[in-house]
Length: 348
Image 1 (cartoon, one colour):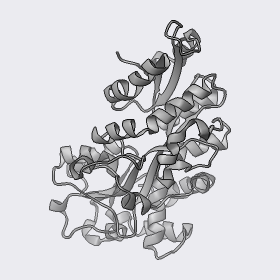
Image 2 (image 1 turned 90 degrees about the vertical axis):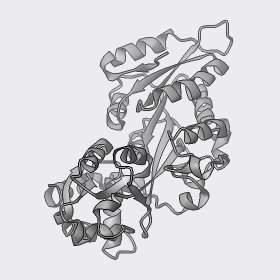
Image 3 (image 1 turned 60 degrees about the horizontal axis):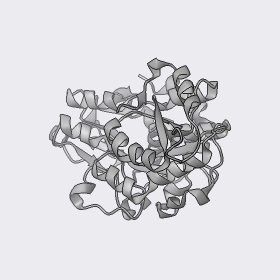
């Protein structure tokens, strides 16, 4: 059964559905509606492997609200949706925290958190939700179209790549990460805004255009408009489908952690049930199934994968512990200033 409620149906429909549910786990009672806000990819997997077992165990009817990060967060801001659980990238989740949109979680009800890698347990503070998946932001390139292998962030500045790369827009989730990488390439040990923007100015001759969505990168790459650029490993399968020889690189200066978080929305009438659902999604069972299906990279340390199963996803303690993690509170504080400066100095 298709569970998704798309944006076009309107949020009144979601609110009406929520009103139909009744609390309780007694099978003789009407199931409780639990509304989950998410992106809408891999719907069949989530319906079958994540939602259905939880529904059966807890007498729950899961209703799914679909949209991108900004759309879904705005619906909560505006009060046009009744949402219990929300999945967001850490960049947008920090905004929700700053605006008081999320409830403080009871970690005693989510024991699976203890099985997570350290960077996933409390990326935005102990009071808020964990990361349920991690990816790395590095570099993807076509080895058949470059003079020598790309191994570092600094290689993107090579004149041999003139008019051959793309960059994420500063407003994209990974935009601030590449800004930090530019500061490192400039030789700074800690982030230096002026040095980063100066360094980016010297890169403009290599950039065809910026991208806002991963699909834009894939399209440019598959059509030969670009041969390389900063990219999230979690979407490598899309590049490989378009260009089978594609290589993904963890830059020698270090890749960045891309964390997607899960939180309980402030005012939810199903807070305990929402926490039980989060615990289920963090379990070894779900995390392992998701990893083997190439849906999400696992953050549960108990997940064990073969080399073939781990191909194309971010996996393993050594890999994850070496990822750079941005301070999202600082990023959000500086965001407006960076966007303004980017548009004036960098944007094509």
